[in-house]
Image 1 (cartoon, helix red, strand yellow):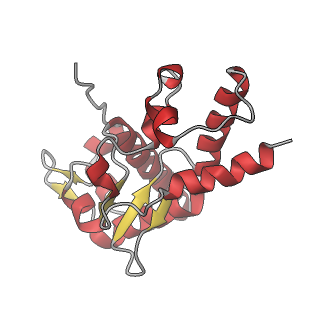
Image 2 (cartoon, helix red, strand yellow):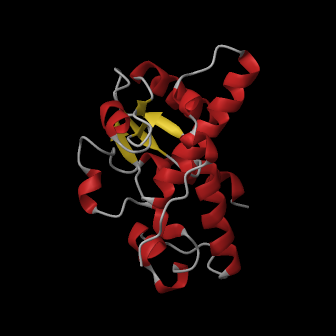
Length: 176
């Protein structure tokens, strides 16, 4: 059963696709865009894309309204996500990015809580066990990795995954 995505009301509002000049309005608009991007990517288990792919995706392109967020505005939204810790640029040109619907610290906290709850402190786990194990099935850790091993290609994600590397930093701080 495929899950459907519920678009926020702003997505059906044509001015949403033009960044507003008023500072207060723009802040609210950017918050709405950030929430939309994170929700959309999480539901579709999308962890990386290029700016051009993003512009052509339904995320920034409302075909029904015939409105598309311009590339410059997409860059502003993505930079806002980077400031919040939910995005890493994968290249110096800022043309491709890694989207983290949970910040690395949040992943680290989830892993730490699971390890503590399951009484497995000081145990060694493989990435596969954390994301595909029977014990972690209901923990949401399956979303830690992209759904396909092909998503680890040089064009998509660095190897080892950036999210996990940063989550490890959080886990080190939690160690007694």
